[in-house]
Image 1 (cartoon, helix red, strand yellow):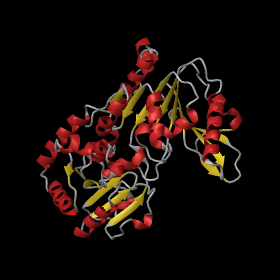
Image 2 (cartoon, helix red, strand yellow):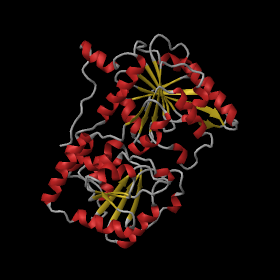
Image 3 (tube, helix red, strand yellow):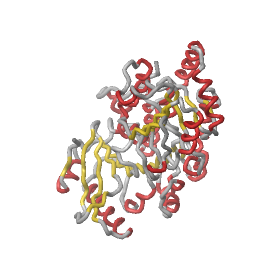
Length: 410
């Protein structure tokens, strides 16, 4: 279980090793939900920063407002506001402002970096000081189901405040680059060695053993960004194929998911276990809907499927088409009648064709990694702070080895 602190000791926990800079992340995503871009980046940041992730509030009957603080492996600290039900929107903002302010009270003497994933957090942090301010714009949140009508105005204010903007994909970079003087497109990256474990796997998860081949697999959050009708239609066209769908269902009614004997909704699985599942599939399937919510997405699972050695069919998401579709790494299909022959073609590849494809995939994946992405971000923060990146300082001084090294897929 995560180590937890009482309200009286929470802020003291942040002052451990106070000579290290403090990075405070304001996130709309729960740290323990799905391991994705924030976790990849901030777990690396924790090698040289004290990382504090402030989540959105939990509401509990009769709660006295307080900050529940807990630790995660790797040196990341999570702070979740606990608030009573029944607060107005204004009261909720004021409560968060008070709790975050008290949490950071006394944090002086070392650089403080604010890292935003959601512009909504600006409503309760605009009066707090920091030495560098970052917006990692991983998604176009305003286009997502249930987005607050305030989000666009707060994002505009956030652009006025931040020193540097990163985007989670190149299509989002193209949309945002004119809105700030210092925008950098840093698409989804890869832990290639982790997913490459799928290639040599011989033992599959027990729950897959009664599911026949061919198996088409998906993993990720299942929400309004998935074309569930496409999944059902493909399953109807090929009842001998089995569609294995891994991921939590959020913001949509699970009762609306297509139910077929050859569609298997397994729920979420831990990031560390994903290679075991991918290694037991024949084709990766990315049935994204084409709508406002997917217009700027850059699916992390694209390079992860490829690192696992799985051929992939995807709907025409811009950041999948460029570069993966254009370079022949991923097959692009829009309708069920396009998906089926694409999948059949992938499964009909000869061993020689597959080997040549994997060699090209590996050369492409070796050019990037989450390590390199974080290093680029750390360098931009260092420019704002007027110093070398902390990791580079320590490595140059010989006090620590570089925290991570890029690992090409094998």
